[in-house]
Length: 130
Image (cartoon, rainbow, N blue to C red; front, side, top):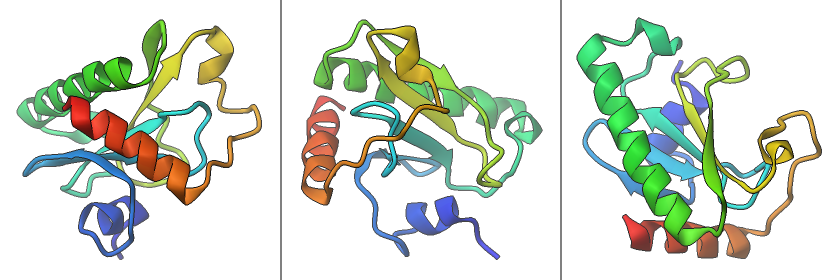
């Protein structure tokens, strides 16, 4: 059965896309830890990031870097934080989180609850910078 991220990347489940190419897909987390929290996923379903082929792994990070640069331009922040956790969804993914304090990358704090309109607006800001 396809993971939720595969279903999002294929368009089966709607998302707030910020970037896409033939191998990777980036979209807003609907329960973000900070405004602009993006998830970057490979379209090819793979559970563990370190099981990726070396060339695919490098391309994945290159795509994430492009998204992070656009994210930093779109959402005022000091840096874009990175987390690779991968326990909740069995599909490799990178969290990109705009940070102004260390607490902005704290996944145990209460999540934000942005409206669909807020998410759409934020996604458009980031996509414009891609």
